[in-house]
Image (cartoon, rainbow, N blue to C red; front, top):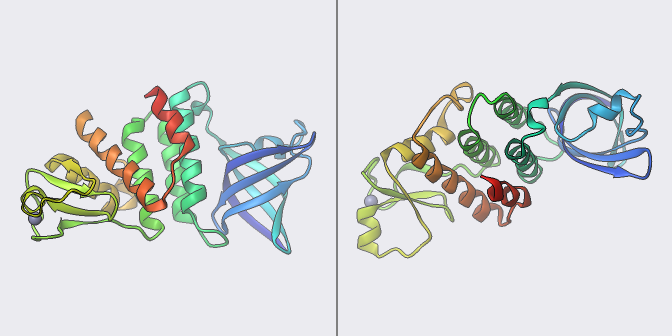
Length: 249
Ligand SMILES: [Zn+2]
């Protein structure tokens, strides 16, 4: 069976002298692992098209429980990521997240567009990494069915207060008054009005407005911490590429 789709290469492993095993985030089939024969022949268009972080047109052949990439043509190579360690690690972290959070054998066009937009913005330096990263983390979580409940304090129902806390283990909010009243010892992250608005924006904004906001550096830091901790607790794993990124930013 032949399948025509587009996809971003999110993992690449060389096999022997000539071949590759890649993982792609595709529009039609979500995350798929594919074998690519002759991918390391530099004269073949498959060579560039199946490299990590290349967005490509792919022709897949399905055989029992594996896929083979027959043809591949590069559509976009994010050249601006190369030569900048911060951008490169961020891009690789998005790939690692996609591999964990995106569906397998199911349509994943929304997730693919999200990551392509994010890669474009950081590769062209149109938005800072500290703004793009929490948007991707939180939106991938929402798409995977883990949308946090950020409407109000889970105890008293207040929509907004000067200080509320985000509870990353459960993805809920609690206001400072309720927190003190209950002497809540759970891991929590303090948010002021601005960082709470930003957190809500990342989860609830329309797709095309997602990356269009700006907040002061301190609030971005709180937002990044919320997103990282939420991903870490809910997916129950640490991300190697995020650890690399943290050593340089
Ligand atoms: Zn409350």
